[in-house]
Length: 114
Length: 111
Image (cartoon, rainbow over all chains, first blue to last red; front, top):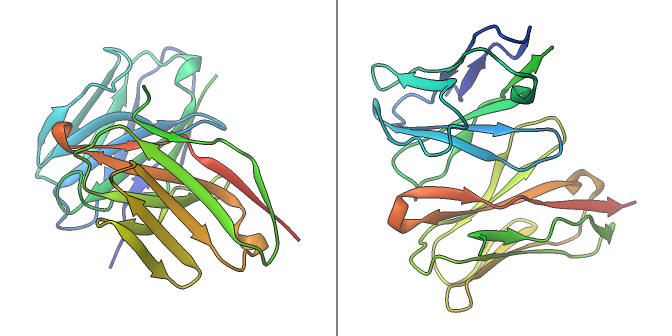
């Protein structure tokens, strides 16, 4: 079956522009996670969805970051007024249920803010 | 206290030897433990999951869990150059229903 997909794979934008990153989880997976990984660093948790609800938004670094999930499937992470420090790889993962289940990662979106 | 701790490495191991990767965690209520491998420029991929005390073997990989001591380890037997990667330990935090990833240990297998 298809794995987690993310688009675009690469995004180059200018400082101050808004960007949208998309994640399509594995079919039937109710939980969806967004992470950020800067070069040579560990995974930084951003937000977690269970169905369409986001019980944990604690990792969003600022109010420029928002995310939504519709139909219990596709999720979009939006970054407004991008800054150079937003440059990173944004990873999406999905799991069947909650935190006790294995997460499967997508290939990531590499965001570069000039 | 950090919730999931790993030695960042790099850990250098000769080809054919056993690589031992360790991880400690702080939440005594944790129930699920995962080891992921991440090659440079790639996304993490699951190596093993373990839920019960003791050892779990899968091919050249063995995960060991000791809940009383709050550590989980990954042994890689007959290490190969292709095992060179960063290994991430992940633990579920039961009270918050979330997964916490360690920062990873860089493993380098010397040919």
